[in-house]
Image (cartoon, rainbow, N blue to C red; front, side, top):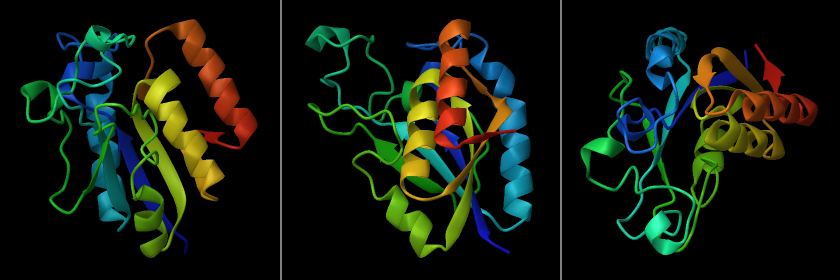
Length: 178
């Protein structure tokens, strides 16, 4: 049976209601994500969690001319995970350099190599935000040759219209929406 991986995208405090850059109702998917983490772990799948891990002067921040308020700054409470990850989960930190943005868990990281070294062929994706980091991660996974599934009951977007467009873009690229 092909090896599977669950990629939990950016389930961090700053992306939840009350955080610096909240996804509306983002906290509503925490129980579903935790259930998937538990189920995939029981099946022996690799559990991967991506996180924004920004330096305090990151290019995406408004103070530097970017579109976003400061969020998920390294070693701050806002960057902490809000899901129950197993101790052996692979943590992928992205957008760690001041002058480089990264929405995808594959961008500027060794995620593709880790997945391939572990014999992963099928990837399941959950997390936030659907039209940003979830979409970018899923599309890059397809580009890297993985069979990709989006767990639609465990993702949340910011804007319903943009989320709808993102789902269609992923579907057209070969991501299977479950």
